[in-house]
Every structure is written in C-alpha cells, then in structure tokens.
Length: 202
Image 1: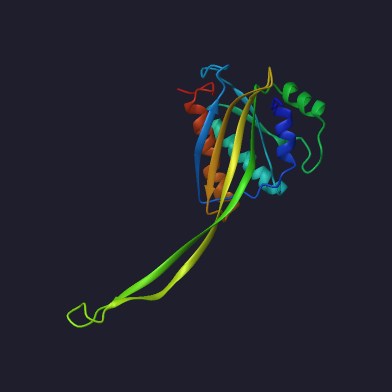
Image 2: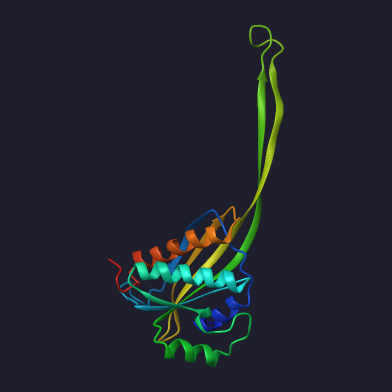
C-alpha cells in the first residue's frame, strides 16, 4: 500500500515518543527518483509522536526554529490540532492545505533496543623479576546500559501526497528529552537543506 502523508501523521500521533538522547546521527536516507532534488519548499508542516503535550510543543518549537534559521516557515501539529485525540483524514487534509503547507515532515519511533556495555577493570600483579608468579586479576568494573532508538523521518509533498524523502536516525544513550530535541532537530533540517529540498538551500 502506498504511504501517504495523512496516514503517517495520524499513525505518528498515536504512538508514544520516548525518544531523547545524547547524540543523533542520520544513518540511512532514501530520495524518490520521481522528484528532482531541486524541488524546494517554503512552508512545511511538522508532526511527531509525543508522550506529552509539553514534549510535543518543545519538539515542534525547536523544529520551527531550525527551519526558520534556513528561511523556511514551519507549522506544527499542536498549533491548533488537538493533542491526544483522533483527527479525521478530511480534517487534517483541510488544515494542511488551507494553511498553504507544501510539504509534511513526520517523525516517529520505529525501534528501541537496550545495549549493555561491560567495562572490566584489571590489574597486573607482577612476581619475581616481573614475570614469575605474576598474573592479571580483576579489580572490579562497571556495567552500563543504554537505549538506542531508531527514528524514521519522512517528507511528503502535499500536492500529490507522494513520499519524496526518508531518513533513519539513531539516538544513543537517551536520558533527557530536551537533549534529544536539541540534537535531532538540526540533524534532520540540515539533511533536508543539503539535499536541496528547502527553498533557501545552497
């Protein structure tokens, strides 16, 4: 089934975004061969999956800030659409088109894995002349667990509802939601700018 922007926005709004992290990197990207990289947008609608209205507002505010730095006007799901409530496809389409949005950027959590790092400290105990009776003994260590979150961001063209760009980001060692927002937002906007999808992209 062809993915459409309204379907992804509604799906994302129903998911729990627990993403927050110390570092973000865009690992994989895809661009539609049907849409030239020179296709540029001046106004973009931003939506994500939020576990609270405060998180959503913080995310959308930062995304708007990052787009504004590129000369792009952006609006968010929470500007006037209800948080935590179902929105009909017709209502969403009407809102996006009535406000002149040319593209829709949707970000959602697609995977979460917990990784464990074992840091074993060791000490060399030397014997006679530094070798006889010597050996390596453990002197303690530490175990660190952290989450690696995979977030997929998709850019849709409103005019024909086509998916034109998608990027998968990995967020490491999540601890604070504001830290995630501060690293994730510029990473995505900068990629869109480099790919030539923003009206002011060089």
